[in-house]
Length: 408
Ligand SMILES: [Zn+2]
Image (cartoon, rainbow, N blue to C red; front, side):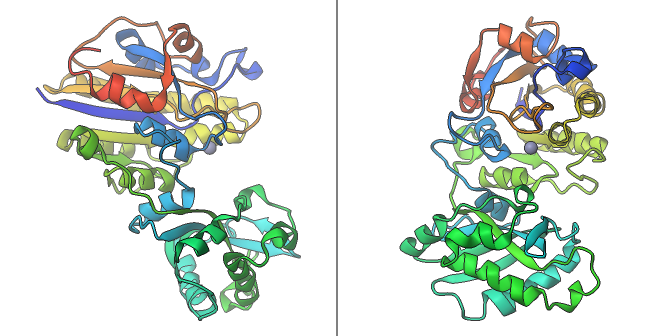
């Protein structure tokens, strides 16, 4: 009998008690027969996905769920997203996340240039490559822009180590956190750093693009941030002999998947938002699980509801994931001859009270189609904490999920 492994990550699902939900957390308030069945028949506990002192981002937290210690494998968003668009992870190259943004009266007005479409964006990147990045103005190394999706792209800058450390000394926030800020003031401390000079130059050149004429949110600047060197990560095949796929609508998660050797399933109707096609994700996960050993299924919607401080929407998204994804998967794999082991856990809590990620531990549940055991009546933050089990999340994959051959 083969064993198949599925990890389901409802992004940002965990939370604290919410007044609007009668003092329950969204997960407690939601009707979740699938998660609850996993808890009753499985193993429940708490995991720390974010090490102390580290910003609780989805990059760090999902890396930990994939079994790698974020303290040992520090990765920047730029390098992860570069992997998601198929760039090789070169240690001599810095990868920047690039936003096409709108600046109005010197203020950052839109982090997405009016959610510019991919086709227009890629055309503009060609112009920016020619007129800003590749025109010989760079002091060291070779740089080039690569097209991603919508307003999100990558700049790869290959350069000698001392030069890379100069570029690494700049810490700019993402433009979504800088709305209303004065560009000159934000960049002032770094104005002599080469990639910041490239950003400034992009502003002069892009303002004149005919494409921007009459646009409400012109794409009139590139914002370079979250830069990091390419790093090779140990793959799931190297660690556990497993082949697998990642199913996610989010570039960052697809990039992480690629870096650990997973293939990326091309979803057609996934949006990374409330209107994503949940059934498509379920079918993709089941199809990949039939053919391979391992599937990483990530769903963004609860995190978005947390950021929007909307506990009712979060509860609804958790219910939708249970109803359209998890419960049908449990029913189907229960009838498979192969053993199917499922780990369900959020990457981090996203607090409906503050609209932000937190570093608090998250609940996890592991279920095995061939070895039911007896656990708590439901899958909730409180019941998982009551179990008394708590461990760093990067231990979970090896110690509790993959390595235990029989039973749980
Ligand atoms: Zn988030």
